Length: 361
Ligand SMILES: *Cc1c(COP(=O)(O)O)cnc(C)c1O
Image 1 (cartoon, rainbow, N blue to C red):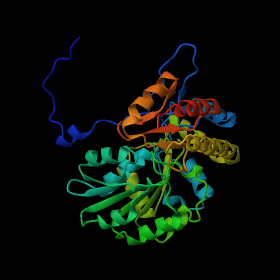
Image 2: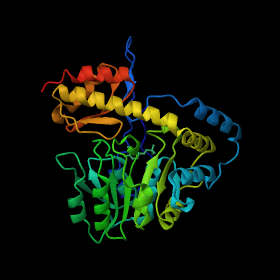
Image 3: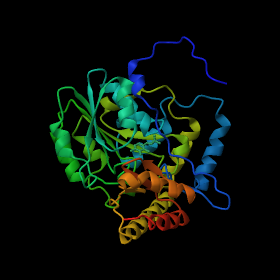
Image 4: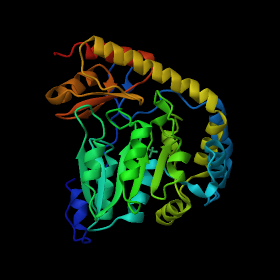
């Protein structure tokens, strides 16, 4: 039945710019072929039994609202990261915290800067708050162009995102370079350091969140349980920042962000960091294996510190994505630019290497 156009509300003009977040595609079911979803940077492993038990136990109290202050996970994070409780803010995934940060500091007439290409939520949230997006192209090495970002700061700049390792390129910013960048940003501009994939970074950062935040009142470091911790379906992310920034983000958040089920799973995950660490190591070693195989096949692939690889295929991107689909592999295609592929289980990675080897050079 054709939808009939009915008189309705007058929407904000900014909504016309918002295409909606494009989620990773599911694989196309193919008879006789095991398919793999390599389009959302999820972990391929099911939850740890201990985490599943915590979820089941928490399910018995879902008739009650959760703790509005998320005391248990805030306390566990405070202990795990060695930062005071009032410097931690939690949200329904770190993407929510990106939005809350924008709502806290930016509105119409303000500028929000971010590297591009990077996380697709950044330009969307600019339009949601009515701010002007200022994308700064990556360098030819697929890295943040931090010098240009500094040069493009204006009196209207209210928020800058950096994404390390960057989604979708996998490139990371050296901590000393990041610190030097932060020193150049005016203290009244909020910098969000989005570390959604930091647990996969090969070189453990010399500077911890605590150090990054300690002497700076304008930095918010974001982490998530969705990627390395394997809890994408439960939506828990957190930020580390000054108490003032954390308090501002709590004001712009919706009440009761973290469900009791999600909170229990996150607390249990922190308690089993060693087991999860082994999974992270397995993904990292697969990443290195796949990367080496692609390079060996003559394919241009950026060095990655995350759980995915970026193939800058230009005009070949869409065709290659289609071939992957036909082989039961859902990847993330950026038409005309490249393809991002998540490192999955070895069988998925092996099949991906085989498909990539058919690329014409
Ligand atoms: C996946 C991702 C996030 C956040 O994911 P959540 O599930 O909302 O925690 C944030 N930033 C980047 C760059 C990501 O890729």
